[in-house]
Image (cartoon, rainbow, N blue to C red; front, side, top):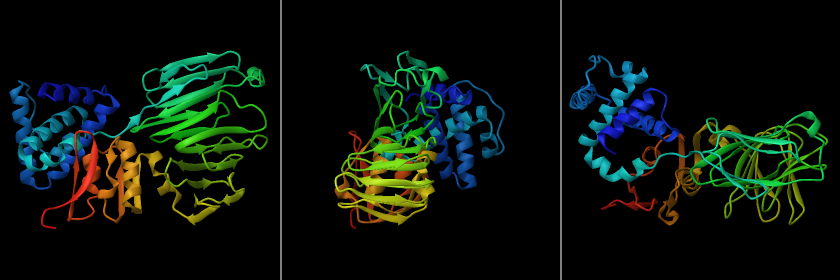
Length: 381
């Protein structure tokens, strides 16, 4: 990226006009590079570097006494971050040689594709406002790209009971590095994690409300005792009347269900085994039945609040979460047998996350241009 491109991006950020990807990049620069300025001498060098940057493009500004006081203001923040970027590039060549590619890999964001019952595909991160109106079902489909939520809503009370024999299924897919929110016509809210697929009707018909899930989603189910809500995965079914819970059902990974409030019932269709869950419990599907344990539910669903929380988490499991969010491949055979303890923002760059979870001085990470990550032992170790 050229100096002019950086300046333009910082100016957009200061005016609140940057894209989510640009805002994430600017905030990541600031978070990482200011962390390196721990000594007064460092701060002095950064301010001097900043001044040289702005003098070179003919921009004058008032001198700054304290770096972090300036950061509180958006216009000044762009000056500071511009200087920090220059400073880092010119004074940390050894570090950037190691992590340049990882630095360029930004976190995921609101990205998803909606496939309507008629086969039409809609990019939800591109099309705003009204998507479609289905007069046969009396359903209005609208999308808000800013908040990342697509809504299916009955147009009026009169249409809620109309044409109940007519039904249609829609599908939302989030890619790696994507997430999105969905509001179903009954008022149920769903948050989709990366690499997830959910299939659901435009309106619920009959005695139950049923959807199908591949991947991970958090559900806030609207209470309706006459119409149980059911989440079907490849190997289990969750039945509720109205409550909050999380289901992680990625292919080739253990299916885990975590309850945050209310009560749910799990069923394994292949065996007929069932298991009730209480708040603060997590059930892992096993060959026959369920393995239930007590958990800190808020930690298990930290992803919906934009956080990674690893609490004695096996490194492979943690890396699977990281890989889905940053759209990378991981050589899992290269990982040592360790467990992680970390609390990290999902807004960080990949490099910041990897540096934060550096679990051993004996290993270092490498990532190639194909976005493939592996860990190798350092020479002499």
